[in-house]
Image (tube, rainbow, N blue to C red; front, side, top):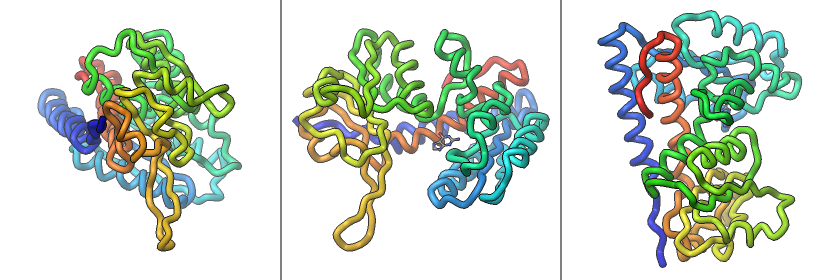
Length: 294
Ligand code: GUN
């Protein structure tokens, strides 16, 4: 069997195009331009690339984009001051503080200070809780992107066995919660899981979000399973350069899975696309306008 490759470019282009049209409609019908502010503390090269891409995508969709940069040495109070200013700014509907933050800044305290209505990352405990109990919430962008891809690939997910490898607050836990809401039977596996390979082999849907290059091998995958690889790992090549790989050993998985997202070019592209969709949702909720479907 050779797996179908799930092309993240196609899925993300669709979400971004829809976002662009929705922004144009909000401007024409309501005079509302959704605004997104991204806060970057420090100069981590990976975070800088992510933040730049988010800014470009926001502007391309016709939204207001604001980027706020603080020094690596910024204090928690300085970060908080920025968050409070953005909370009070009526032209800003979404606030994203890029993680990780420098160690002198308490990440949870900063996330907690963001107005839950503007929390386009869906990391505020109010949004985590609301999503868990099935109330309207802001949903984290990467798991939301994975869910869109899964629903478009598989249709109804009801009754499927889903295994999420990784228990981070950013991906693993919200992903599991979203799959549960789709009536999947969900297992969250992690580094301490006994017989991890055996647990993975049960999965109709396998989501890998552990941050370990090519950890999930071909013989961990149930034949025909749909594999979503959230990992983005940079590994050295023989020529001294580097290349990106996921958490799944792609060539081995290609022989077993039914469908798989590649790295790069897979669900990574959906994160930015869903950020735009979340910013539109946030803007509509703040303005009391019926929100469009993602
Ligand atoms: N760092 C890595 N992924 C993310 C994300 O989705 N949101 C934020 N704020 N920081 C991140």
